[in-house]
Image (cartoon, rainbow, N blue to C red; front, side, top):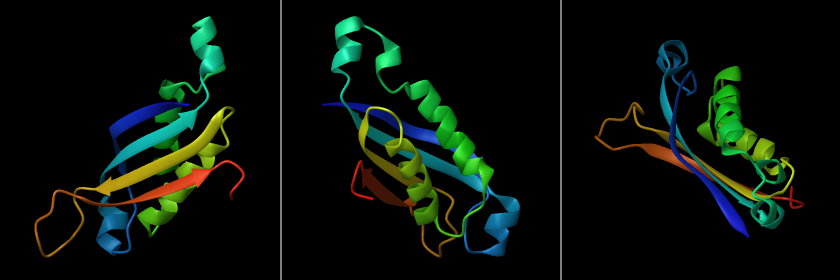
Length: 121
């Protein structure tokens, strides 16, 4: 089993429960991990036999900017559900980080991680 990894994919979007977050928007960072069986891709050195991380990055950005969500949990789940439906994907974990979260204390970021496995809903 192989893992396709994307770290700190930056997307400007409008998610959050506060009106200012929805209106002004902010940067979000996405970490993606997809477990795949890439044995055929490795054997034939053929990208068409595995999940293409370029397409994954584009899809994460499209999903993140396509709709607005109050909760980053919902956003992470929508992305994870999309990823697990990709041919060859066995498990997907998506972490959404909010480095500009409106908090009264200083943090590097707040975030959530959501995982989905094929066949487990």
